[in-house]
View 1 (cartoon, rainbow, N blue to C red):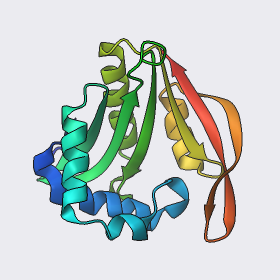
View 2: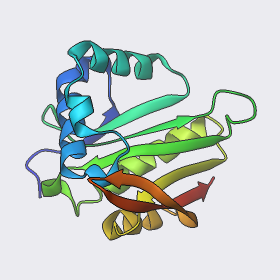
View 3: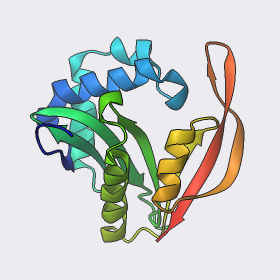
Length: 173
């Protein structure tokens, strides 16, 4: 059990340093789980990260949540929905990550539920996500939250010459 309560909250532009650190940690530790590349992202200047958080903060169709303990993010995820009348009903969850020492405490589920609640308040009808084949812990987490597999994307990602397929999952609201 952790010493301080962990709060799930939207990440704001003021969270630049802790968000950047956690995002880079995730990309470096699990390159096969993210489409973004660690080296490419780590080389970006602070202005890139500030713009990313500013854009997210001011965008009505997306949000990034952080799991915060004592001014440090120990988990995160984002969700965004389409902005056109034809796609506003559908959202995509991305960037799910929980620090290893905080896993097994349902933080992933809490982050996902924050995204699902956000989707409901925005009139979303279906929430989708992808998980690399072989990532059984994430697959179980998503299944516990009600997501079901609807397909498999072959050759979704190539990391260090190794090809990874991705399970496609959805939750109908």
